[in-house]
Length: 340
Ligand SMILES: Nc1ncnc2c1ncn2[C@@H]1O[C@H](COP(=O)(O)OP(=O)(O)OP(=O)(O)O)[C@@H](O)[C@H]1O
Image (cartoon, rainbow, N blue to C red; front, side, top):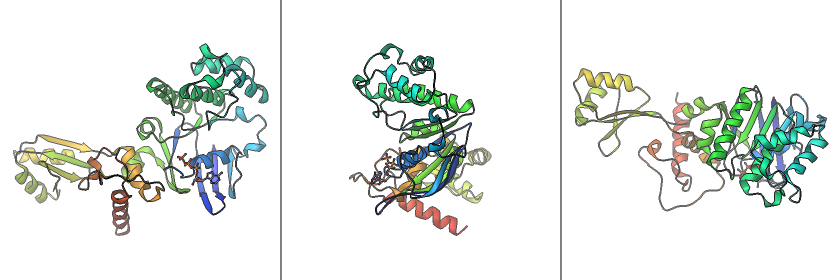
C-alpha cells in the first residue's frame, strides 16, 4: 500500500501539494488525475524520496522510501523516461539498476523481452524513439518484480499497439494483486484501464473514488428521445412526473436514466419513438466538470462553450474557454447539493 497523510510541498510561495491524504490499495489500477500543474509529479517524486515534503508523510508498506534496502524490489517507477544515461545500451542501463539493487542479471533479459526491446538490447538509449524510451523506463520499473508500481504518463509516445500493451500490462499486474498507481492525461485510456481514481487540483484532493462513482457523481446522465409525436410525448411524460426538455433538432431530454419507464409510457399511449437512448458522460467530461475551477492554464478559443444547452452532448474534447461552462455547471451542482 501507498499511504499519504497530510502530504504538503511548498516551493517558496507556491503550494504544489496541499495536505493530501489518501491510500493506494493493491489489486486494482488507481488512476491519478489532475490538470497541468496540479501536483501529480511532485506527489510521485515525494513518494520516491526525490523531493522532501514540507509537511505530512508518505509511506510505502509502512516505511519511507529511504528506509527500504533494495527499493526496486518493493516499488518500481517510471517518472521520466529520458532520465537515463544515453551512452549506455538498454541492456547495460538495466544491468546497472539490477546490480545496485541485488537483482540477478538474468532478470534483465526477461524484462527486455516483456517490453519488446530484445532486438535493440545492445543499442545505445540515446538513439531510442520516445516510445522505445518509455518501454525501457517500464522495463526498469518491472526489473525488481515489485509489488508496487507507479507510472507517470506511461503511454506518452507509445503507438496504439504500445498503448494497448501497457493497458493490459497494468491490468495484469493489478490482477496479480499488485498496487498500480498511474497518472495520465489521456482520459479515454484511463477510462479503460483504471478501476479507482484519485483526482487532485491545485495540489488538493478533489476525489478518491471508484471510476463508476466518479462519472456518476460528476456528470449528468439523461435519456435522449426523438418522436414524430413530440408534443404529445412531452405531455404524457409530464403527466407521469417525468419532465422532458427540448434540446433542439426534434430532440427531447429527460434527466436521470429512466429509459424503461419512458418506453413503457410511450407504448401505453401508442406513441412512436425514433430514438430512446440513455446517455452517460465520459470520464473526460466528468473530469472537466470536477476540475474546471482548478485548471490553472486555460486555452482561449473563439468557439465558445461546447454546448450550452446540453453540455453532456458535447464531444468533451473542446478547449475550456475561459473556464465558463464547466464552472457554471459546478456551481449549479454545489447549489443543488447544498439545497438537498
Ligand atoms: N522544483 C520546482 N520549483 C518550483 N515550482 C515547482 C517545482 N516543481 C514543481 N513546481 C510547481 O508545482 C506545481 C505542481 O507541479 P507538478 O509538476 O507536480 O504538476 P503535475 O500535476 O505533474 O503537472 P503536469 O500534468 O503538467 O505534468 C506547478 O505549479 C509547478 O510549476
